[in-house]
Image 1 (cartoon, rainbow, N blue to C red):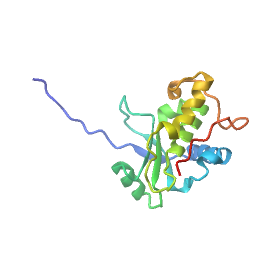
Image 2 (tube, one colour):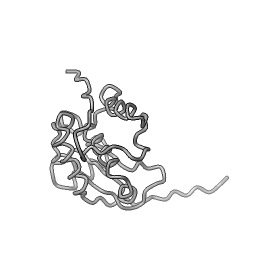
Image 3 (tube, rainbow, N blue to C red):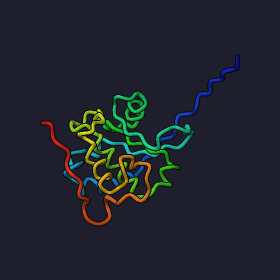
Length: 166
């Protein structure tokens, strides 16, 4: 039987990301009908430095339902109920257009009530993003593709508003 060693990895350092906040602000202004209802002051935009496991996602959008986010957000001493955290090194290597799309998707994940909950993934809610990329020939797995169209350069992209269940 082999020896099993458990190594506790250090908690990453969270650094406020003005770049990601500015992208979010620009997206909100340009795509108001999709993310205009989001109170950006409720979101802590952060970059993470430290150990990142091989399979860890490059970004995380979470609310108060996650223990690590609750701890981080309460330590800030500000009224934040969401955290959009990206791993600094791989994030810096992404094309700007992919950053825009990821941040757009994350903003859309914020509950319309702004209560710290994340909108559950649902084809009806998020389908408009996938549909757009399928129409362009990128397919449904746009997050692993390069050369995505920019949301912020040029005209507003022809995205179709998702159905409102209310």
